[in-house]
Image (cartoon, rainbow over all chains, first blue to last red; front, side):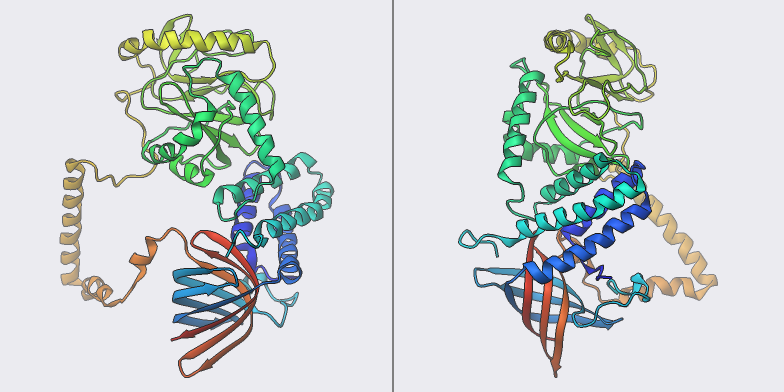
Length: 116
Length: 380
């Protein structure tokens, strides 16, 4: 089972919204929607691991940090994200990071794996 | 991070993920006995939302863009034979204004089904949905401006049928076309059955509860406002539509003075008062402000009285000032810049933190980025 971490992204949220619409009109069951999301988790995890090959550097000041259920949550201020090509500056950014080394076990409830 | 020199990897990545997911769940859908149509609709909804979020550059393939342009032109020809009506081609210019207008207008949407499909370029569906407070399951699809400067929202319900919502500023009269036969029927708050289910090109009617004005052969009945978009499908209705659109223009001129004198059957408010669906708390009039102030004062008096008896109630408002919160400033921002990723190593030395991250998706300043590795430094 893959991390559900990426559901709160543009891609993930648009999928969830679309599924919700279909549920509202009863074109699909909530159960089926859940299956789709699980499939999405697998697909996005695989795609990120295999199809993306770029590096980013960033620097800023750390406002808050939290480590809960093996999930790190940081809030940084005045951050510069640098890629080879260009630069992006933001005043505030929230970073949510799950453990990259261990994958979630099947018997752990899904709810503990997402953001704290 | 997307430059013209290197191609942006994000659209391709997203597309591949969408394809993968749709392919994988096709089996699941079939097992559940769900039609392939629904699966395609899921894909369309998903892609549209991504488009509308503008978080991804160049998401649309050239093919799809060409298709869209074609559709727009076709429908423009069918729908607006009359040069008086603003065509879809002029819309890209009007859109930014539409967006502002849409945010300020109040619209009443009946729960009754709305039928209609007009083709046009659209604005953000999410913004429009929020603005219009659409019923669940209905998403704005496109916008259209009529010759009167009215803004029509094409709304797409999840079941595939499409509706038009009129944004009322002035009463607009159009002939009502029930079927290609063109039989008139007074509609107060009724649902008109779609001619063909789910097809993008249909005739239809919008119904709104305030003023209902039916124009039929230059007659005006005051009951409800009915908007009609012309028929687009290759049906016998098409020539009728063209004639109707033209006669509508004439009717509008004649009917406008009649609107004021029309007898309202369902409305209890003065036209063009609208039912506000975006909640109370307006600050537009002095009366409202005074009322709110009075209300607050009454609350405070009650609180003081209670405080005398029970010390805790008084303390709560006092203690709440102790919090140091930056939240108010931050809420003003539309985009919360978020990075979702996995961590390889997080290191700290005194107050110097080092981050080694991987496989991340970032949304910065409204745009999406991805990385396979990210290294960062920060001081706490």
